[in-house]
Image (tube, rainbow, N blue to C red; front, top):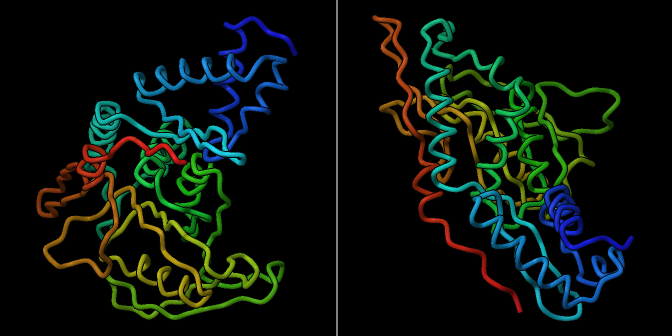
Length: 282
């Protein structure tokens, strides 16, 4: 379809936003808009500058016969700070404190705008890493996992407490809950995860890290690799976590005698501040 440049820019922008982490050849846009590749390159330069100035993403150019352009979702440091500030304000209500030191977050994780923003922030951190699959534990982490997966353009696999007949043969492991020290079971269908896959583990809440460590061990049973771990809220504790090298968006402290909650930024802000622009690939 032959479009004016203004219309072409709008359509290209929408197309790139809907196809993150996918290499789009220049020839595809050239044929789509019946325009010369030189014109398409100029359009992409405009979109690239706009994305980066607005902090909504980056365009990575890949040269060569199999090259093209790829959109990498990202979130600017200022936007991340505003997002975390809003979340901290919403989540410090004492009524959110549940027995056992858990936090009620269903209302927040049920809002598409909030969950998608959180997903984009997590995806920003791992934009330069190879991620094939998002893994999460049932059930509250599922919306968050899908939000991250939509930004990474990869599938989601859900680890469950018990097997289902509709999922075929499964692999199950026992793990020790970090908080209760109880032995629990997690299950994953054999056909859900390929060998040598790069897995990003995502969860909504972490106390001691037992569930995260269990998913790490389950990943190894499939011969896959953990590309990273991300959690929405971690509970601040004097005891070390059972896992390392994870990112958290928020950190929760509880004064139980006063039923008071304190929220502070997790380590994600340190990562966002240190992120570098993507390299042009030859």
